[in-house]
Length: 358
Ligand SMILES: Cc1cc2nc3c(=O)[nH]c(=O)nc-3n(C[C@H](O)[C@H](O)[C@H](O)COP(=O)(O)OP(=O)(O)OC[C@H]3O[C@@H](n4cnc5c(N)ncnc54)[C@H](O)[C@@H]3O)c2cc1C
Picture 1 (cartoon, rainbow, N blue to C red):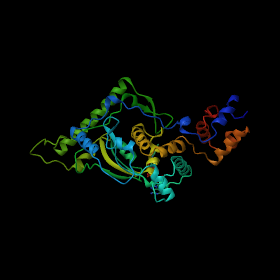
Picture 2 (tube, rainbow, N blue to C red):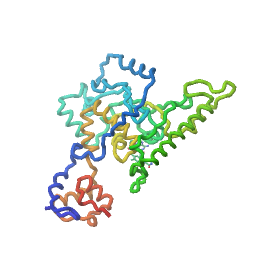
Picture 3 (cartoon, protein in one colour):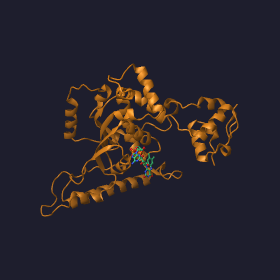
Picture 4 (cartoon, rainbow, N blue to C red):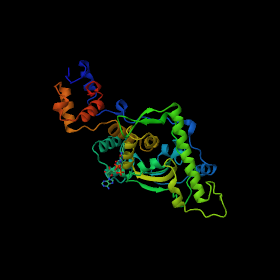
């Protein structure tokens, strides 16, 4: 039996069961699917729908690899939040491209699916990253400005944003659904706590809506132009678009083309599909995670196994776990870990009884 401070005597088996870097299937604690509220999904204009239909009906011949599953959803606008979307508009390469570049081979790169799988897992496990840079993907994203600010921190992508110097921004603002209207978390300064409901929820939503509408109306007044392109007062000049936009609320939607390679896409998804990330960006990351699965299924599986479901364990943490397996006595004090490190380690191995509460 393993003696662990604060651990129930019967948990010896639990320790050995969870000791390995296990698959996401048993340990998907960080990335959780997000249910999309179907009552408030974005509406595309007739012209936009027509444009997408045209793109989807085209057919081009190529000698390059294509991915049937991704082709099926190419150009489609997958709804995100109330007015946003994610569209895959282009991509280069597939799982075999990673294998091909890792082997620097002349051919398709595929020996057998099983050996490709083994190689991709090996590359992922040992952080051999450059073969993953050989695949690229391009998205068209519509998102609220305050989420775009978080997203743009990912510097390893190529971005081209809708120009609010050149065009008038759509009259669309993000308003959270009631179940996403949460109070400030007490334990985590960056997070959310309990749901706000009842009268207070109504008041908050009204404030958000009124402020967005008022500033948008002032935006139109300054531009001397309505969002539909009609002029407000023929005798007045409109303020330059690059200036008029500055009073808009951060929940106003913007759009961009975002292109990145597979390595950096996985870095983005690891951080932004995680439960530590803000809900609104996670909605986008979750949709993109699904596009990753369609595009490079073998890499997706390795990514979920090693990056998402796996756990990084420090040298001190490893020693602590080794002692636990051997049934040796160990405690926070002699582990050399901080309380936070200790608790994170115990939680990631599901040793809940060893988590130190106070
Ligand atoms: C939950 C969460 C909370 C956050 N909170 C904050 C916050 O409070 N304040 C804040 O400012 N940011 C915050 N961030 C943003 C975070 O610090 C990163 O800026 C963001 O996640 C981008 O990560 P990245 O640098 O790995 O991505 P990328 O910019 O895409 O870079 C990918 C990798 O490329 C390499 N790289 C890129 N550029 C350089 C460079 N110039 N020099 C050397 N290496 C480079 C690095 O290895 C990097 O990891 C938060 C992020 C998350 C997920």
